[in-house]
Image (cartoon, rainbow, N blue to C red):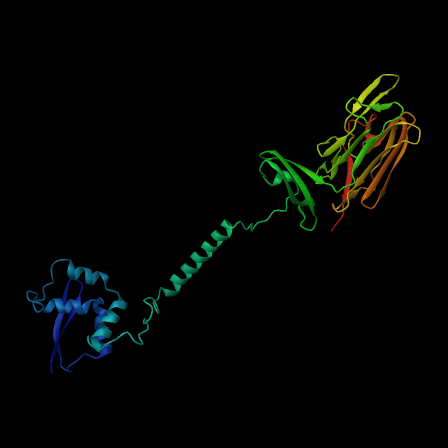
Length: 346
């Protein structure tokens, strides 16, 4: 049986003829379809051509957007699908079974791998975004001082690192009074006291009753030099009070707090001023080069360090001892950055 066929090209009909073999072969049909750039809607187009009023044999192009849309949308893949449909027939059932594209519209498509790459990159970018949102710091900085952390106003413990070295951590107490203004303190265990007992020229102050005893829970430290500033007594809780009248009446002073690492006495008898420094568990010890020298009239005293503990004692007819003796803290009431510590690795 002779079967007419027509091949379409953009905006018209290329020509018609008769397939004397009765049916174009599947491969020839695919080739003809590919050359003609026929869309996967070509079967619908032929049905439209067969409708009344559409004269295919005239060779005239259809008017309107119907042909234009099908031709402009045609791709080699669409042409291949059309040829496959032509060869298998419209009623052949599930003609996509075994087709390279079966199961996924993009399977086997030249752009499939490229699209997958884009998706992978997008997924990776999205994961990075989630990681950032989760607060994971991928560029961690080992802060050396509290001022580097940008902390809110308040007091809180933080782990700092000597010289930004992750192998040299220590626990600091950060006191932030305003944004970007944080002081670094070393929290202390029990056993850090400075005293000035009564006796001789030292009498109870008006609000005293007993000699002053100051107990420290923290000290201000320079996290770079590891020098303690003993003039900061904000970490002290004091009881009692000592009033000194010495120097033939030239020196009058009430000691309501004794500075860290200092002691004072105003008698050469058995009563002596003492101080204790306990750095157990802090990763610090008093430096071996640290000097404790008694100052004042007829004063005697010494500082002894054993491991993480240092003790001070002094006797004098108005004398004291402190870590700042070498900077002329004659009356043991000024203090300063004069107590050197050394880091001990964990």
